[in-house]
Image 1 (cartoon, rainbow over the protein chains, first blue to last red):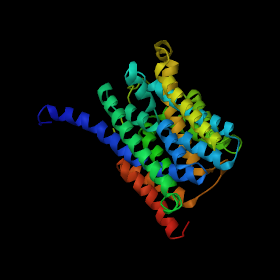
Image 2: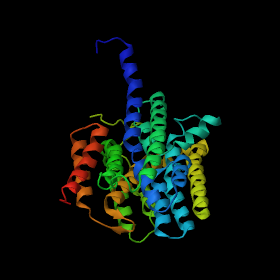
Image 3: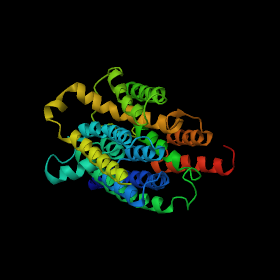
Length: 239
Length: 105
């Protein structure tokens, strides 16, 4: 590398921001699917928007919308939605070292602890990059998710169906892209991912919506020990 | 409708409380290697589970939606070719949308 000294540092700062914004935009737009689904299930536009603003965790929101639509007891729907949000507590456990430790900043940061911010944050090589990545992802996805929830809620029934636009594939494709580097990282990760997927699919017919995914967390307990010590921060794209 | 509002607000409160819980658990808990390992693998297990469920489940029944699976297959191909994130998403959704528009699936 014959360039000036500050270029690697600039790149180190640009990358988490770029990753966060790209992911935030890509996943945030699926708020349109949630907005449409929520209003389609019988929620008002205001209810859909408040849920996106205050719950801000997609799977739980979809779960609650599904419960409202299914006419299954709301108490069960709330329990399922909150249970589904419990994975965010586990993400927080992992992120605690990397995010602000106290005060209002921690209270605000907590709201941003979701699948996407966790993935971007943990993919960074150091604490400074991790915080930048978290912030970029959180801000981008929060704005995009809430704006598109509003659009989807208003547009429900007027635009094409989310299915015809392939929006139902956005979620799984995004999650797959997020764990891809981890799956490449080692046998332990692949075992945990495969076991998690199998547990969730095997229990889906027998448990309330949302619970199988929570149950899949047990895959992290039963997976084999790692082969050797690895760096704390997985690096996606690294050969 | 009041019931739905209560459900919305309780869900929001519960989800926020859970997010905060992870950040405020005592340092001593985090120091355990077993907890660290568990927390490290949990996102992989849960996200893989979400992929599987969103790919194959419709509510509580398992279904095979050819267009959706083709979209995911396209995503895997894009990932193997090391495509950037946005490209992976567009390729996946586009594949499903085109197949459905053609009525092929």
